[in-house]
Amino acid sequence: MNILSNVSNPKMILRGFKVVTYTMMGWEMSLQYHDRYILEQTIIPFFIDKKEFAKVLFVGCGSYTKHYEKWFEKKEYWTIDINPMKKIYGANKHITGSMSDLNLYFKDNSLDLILCNGVFGWGLNERKDVEDAFLGCYQSLRQGGVLVVGWDDVPEKKPFPLETCESLNPFQSYFFPPLSTSQYRNVADESEKHVFNFYLK
Image (cartoon, rainbow, N blue to C red; front, side, top):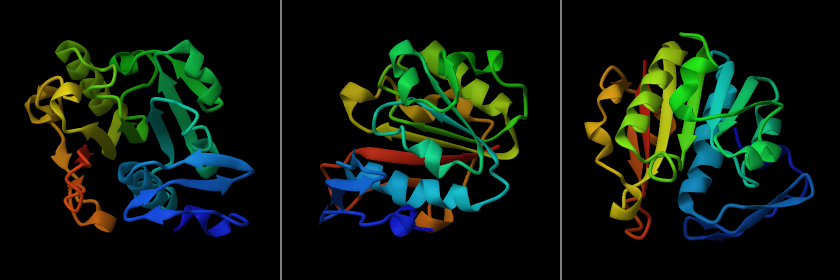
């Protein structure tokens, strides 16, 4: 599925793997980096097409994520952000709160998919908070649920090695078919340090 296939007059400017802008529903949406392109054109469409991923939580909101609710309109789509000002970019089902407190908002085994991109190292920094956050993800996901974590593999945005996070240990690696891997990084461009990890409960 290509999200832009049903959009009238989509405008995409590709420079290598970088997308500058496209027009959707009359808005200019920024897709400045390869990682955002992979998220929006490969990762999100895959899960939208799968009926078994019906209840979705997206962690972190911004002007560049507001339109995701339209894409997930046939799902039960939730957003969460600790910043009250970000509510305007969230879903109708939005939570103002921390990812570290997911147990306060979701019952065990109640979510099918959690998308967490640009949160680890961008506010979710303290080890205890990170451990609590990913433990909450594990508890909130049903058996067979998937957690996607996008993070920057650079010292200033990596509070500690993600692989040392103990609360990720109960997860299995999830082989993501469109990218043929359970961990994706853009090896074609050394300036791109963003990584996507895929986990299965």
